Each structure stands twice: as C-alpha cells, then as structure tokens.
Length: 239
Image 1 (spheres, one colour):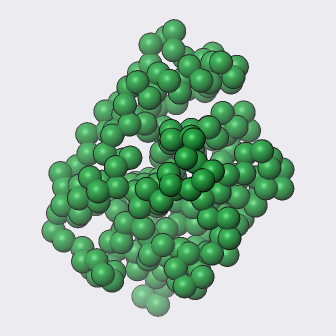
Image 2 (cartoon, one colour):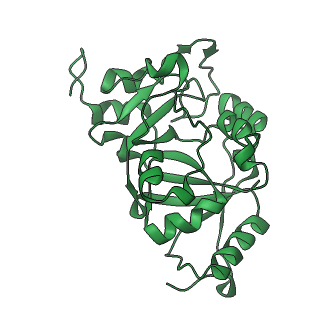
Image 3 (cartoon, one colour):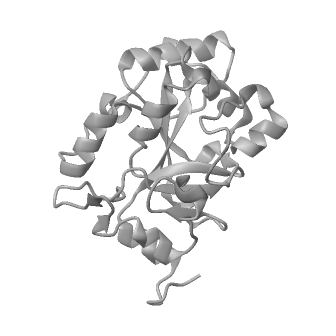
C-alpha cells in the first residue's frame, strides 16, 4: 500500500524515526508468554487460554480483539494508570513493558490510530502509510509536538499501533521493569514456576511506569536513561 504522495508503509515508518514498539503486560502473564513463546491477542487468549485472559477493556471498544495493542517508542502510561485501577488488576500491581521489533508495524492488517484506539468505537483506526504518519503530525488534538518531543514517539502519547497477533517471542527486543528489585522478583517468580527464560535484554527504567513523569519526559526531554541490567547468574532461569 502506498500513500497519496507515493510513499510506502516502510518509507513512512522510516520517516517516523521510531525504532521499536512498546507493549504493557501484567507481570502475572509473563510466564505464559514465555511458555507459549508468543504474545497473543485478547481473542486468542479467550479462545485458547481463558485463565490468562485478563483484559483491561472487556468490551474492546476498538473492535479489534484479534490484534495486540502497541505504541511507538514508549509505552502508554495513561493506559497503565487506568489498568492498575481495574478490579482484575488491583491485587496484581506488577507490570512489565515489552519492547518489540518496530517492523511489526509493517505486518499485513496492522492498523494505526492517532489517539486511543478505542476512541469513537475504533473509527479512528486506519491502515497504510498516511495513517502511520498521522501519528507524528505537528498537532494531534489537543496536543502539539514541541521542539523537545523525543524522536520516534507519537504526538499523542496514547496513539496506538494494533498488530495482528500472535507476536513471536523472537520479536521481543527488551524487557523493562521499574527497578533492579523488580527484575530480581520477576526472575524469582519464573524460577518458582519452573519457566525457562531465554536470553533476553533487561532494562531498568522507573519513568516508564509513571504516567506523569513519562508524559513530561517524552514531550520535553531529556531522553530516558533505560539502564541495561544483567541479572546475576543465580537469578537466571536456565532454558
């Protein structure tokens, strides 16, 4: 598919300067993702693994239950703040941010919304290069893209990329948690569950999990530290 200006989706993605997608998931779902070696859509989970089906939007107002909700470059802090208040998640406060291969945005059937995908019952979702570039427009009501806006992040920080699932584990670039202690806790949980953990890059960045701080940093800079963390050998779970 090409745009009215003749550019392809791949060219539009390059213009966006995005280098990754981001996807929030409850920490309690991570063991299933590792065992299954895939991130699955809510429809797929409801059909094949209902015990893992813990959606934050049970009605799926975006009308795309077969797709995995992602954002460009940074996770949707507004989504996380709301999700933490949902009854299904009140007793499970730990969340993980998965950074994914940006070229998933080129997958057939991927849709783009310049705002929250559920807005207007999903009618803002569109495919193609023009739809992708709309996420990086100078203005996305009520937001304006300032000079300090971090590269690769959408103008509206709730703008979404809906990727047809499942997404193979091989597309995971890094796993982000808010602290070194959170990484250690997660690895201990996986060890207790006897889950094999493949070689993964781990990132510690508390700002990713704080809506207000994340919004301010993405809009105004500076760039996040996103410290790499290498777990001690005793913390790792052998494959």
